[in-house]
Picture 1 (tube, rainbow, N blue to C red):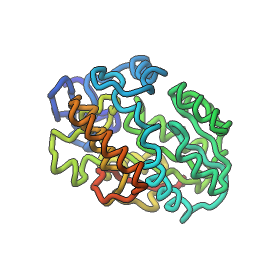
Picture 2 (picture 1 turned 180 degrees about the vertical axis):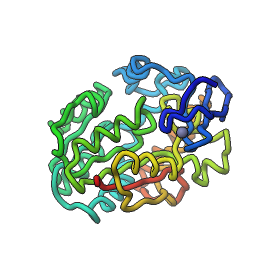
Picture 3 (picture 1 turned 90 degrees about the vertical axis):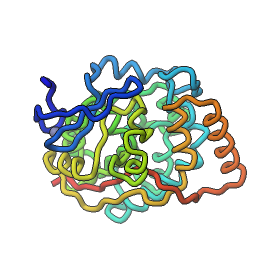
Picture 4 (picture 1 turned 45 degrees about the vertical axis):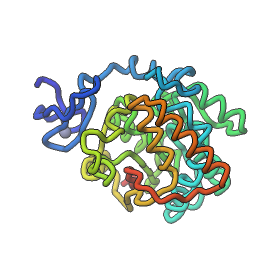
Amino acid sequence: MKEKCRFCQNRDLKVFLKKKGRNLVECKNCGLVFVSPFPSENKIRAIYTKKAFKKFDPADKTEAGFGHYLAEEHLWKEFLKKKMTQIQRFKTEGKLLDVGCGIGTFLEEAKRARFKIYGVDIIDFAVEYCQQRGLKRVYKGTLTDSRFPSSSFDIVTVFHTLEHMWDPSAFLDEAKRILRFQGILMICVPDRKSLTARLMGKNWFDYYHYQHLFFFEDKTLINYLEKSGFRVLKRGKEGFNWVLAVRILSGMRCCYSSPVLDKLAQLVNDFLKFSKITRIPMLSGSMWIIAEKK
Ligand SMILES: [Zn+2]
């Protein structure tokens, strides 16, 4: 295989999965799994159109995974509140940038915690929505597009976004550039070595989430961070979590397009909203890392 690992440049890649139109390879050196052949930047940008963020239509694969952020915001809020608490163990004030801020759920949390907040997102709809809810310093684009000044942030967060990027290494370099000395970076991504992923094996729904281009395990991500000039301060797995009754159903719904799953996810979501239950123990399959700029 001529292709190189998109992280360590190693050429020793093996086919990891070839199913349902998905083609994933695994680097034998660093453990990174990624889509092959890798789409062009333009092709990836085109996924994130306004239309893609609108209502989910199971018949249209290009819309998978986005339309429900609005409907599920109450659940994400709980998840992100916990992330805020984890950050506050290291920093309690300063400038915070959320990359891939979506509809601004985490920025609202950070605002309440009195951080000076900034956001970027590639989707027009998300940026417009943030502006409408009063989050004025939210800009459209990727982190690299945004050209923030060097050493200007205390915290950069990236929740369930790194796996969508076409160049995670470039993102880490840019995050390092804009962070102040000892500024912190918090990453949260699906964990391909989580219990959910292990139990589901190659049927793990995340592998079929077609906006996801990279699949990490903790050792790969730590390696990435250290090579990019960060020191890992704390990390963990989302053991028991409550967003996920709906998230997992949504994930499965996106990947398997079943009207039954769609209905079921809707019912569970409506029930949770109605009953105001936010804590449902469920293995989420994601991990988080807090690292500091060296
Ligand atoms: Zn590699």
